[in-house]
Amino acid sequence: MMEDRSWIDRRLDDRGFVTNEFKEGVQFFVRFAFSRPQAKSEIKCPCSKCRCRKWGNPEVVSMHLCKHGFMNNYYIWYVHGETSNNPAINFIGESSNSGFVSNESDAMYHEMLVDAMGLQGEYNEEPMAEEPNHKARKFYELLHAAEVYINNGEQNVTVLSWIAKMLNMKTLYNMSAANWDMALALSRKVLSAEDQEKVPKDFYSAKKMINVLGLGYKKIDVCINDCFLYYGEQSKNLNACPVCGESRYEPRNMAAVRQKAIPRKSLWYLPITPRLQRLYMSRKTAEHMTWHLKCSDDSDEVIHPAGSQAWKHFDKTYPTFAEEPRNVRLGLCTDGFNPFGSSGSAYSCWPVFLTVYNLPPELCMNSEHIFLSMIIAGPKSPGKNIDVLLRPLIDELNELWTNGVETYDSFRKQNFIMKAALLWTVSDFPGYGMLSGWSTHGRLSCPYCMENTKAFQLQFGRKISFFDCHRQYLPPTHPFRRDKKNFYVNRIERSPPPQD
Image 1 (cartoon, rainbow, N blue to C red):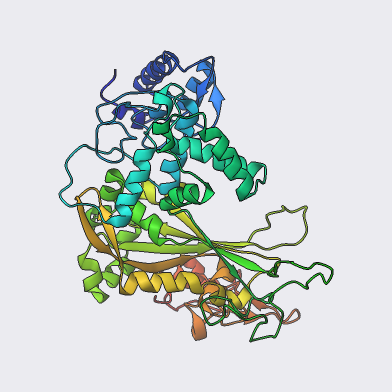
Image 2: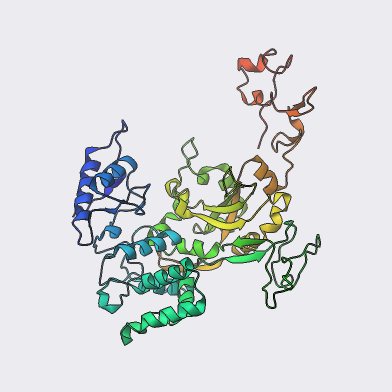
């Protein structure tokens, strides 16, 4: 067994060719993966593109790994049956009877759990200096259930994988809760009395078990014109928008006796607090969450937002927040898209994402650490009313900023109060106008130049042109500044660039 896996990060040499060391490592991995008892003619490809979601023969897997490299942090090959004294799936800090996932289907559910929670890296067996809080302990108990086998492990089925498959079956075939309970009761009869105590008894118990993951969402009714959010106790019993008077629900079918009220428009909100807490439940990720302290100030190039003036200014303005390096800095990004493609009908759906900037550059832009917090349905853009729809997210960010939430740090083995702050928004120019309220139309649309803008109005088209606004950013001695022919006629640019 190759103990040193550092070759995984040294795929290319200085000339961009695959190194011999990496090729030898790939050959070793392929021999190891296909030597496992569960391996057949194909295995899951662990390249950064397939991410163990597609299968391939030895030639295809070798080619993919040389072309794309291994997926992030895949130093212990647990999906392919590797055992280790410190396995990547040992989440609760205790020794396990089985150091690897011996079933391909179970491996898929382990990967689902790790990806969904943003859990990356290794988990050690050191004793905990401080006991996890109640919520963290509940989460670790669920992870422990992932390694609890039923039927004495003869079928390689764990409690978590069995319940996840049953819930997936309910979704695929649109089963009612009563129908699902009957199927569960029938399948429980083939289990021993000991195994029956391990698995949930009904749909409610299964949902309660899975909900510990923190993957829930809130469905909130919205006015059809996006001018009001039916959010909070005061608006719970309203049937019409207090702003525009539009009905909250679709017209009822008079022939139906017991018809459930159907909202005309809804918003899906995914709380971010549980997912931020999950980042500290992984020892590896918890260590990286304070990486921003190591960001060098000596380089002239900004490789991470932690080295920017805005970050430093924020730390000086709020020193109490900056004293705790584990507090989270966030960035918000949103934009509209048509989920039906260009050939479909006109529709604008607006997802809202949050990025964790505490992590180093190679991690903070990974899909595992970019959290979807909200889905604003169409069919039209929310426009200037986006601030109304962002209210649940704003309330949660205010709570994280003011009071924080108790979180367990698995790297330092202690509980602490985690707070969060939103530092930046990332969007295109129309999205910038929606998020900030700044008018992005007309001559004064530039938020930096403002009244000192060089924009002018075309003589015949009457449109605003920003044709000659960029020469002021050139060096003072640049010849383009004195060019009166190829730019704005008879104008010499002497103005310095606008200050932030």
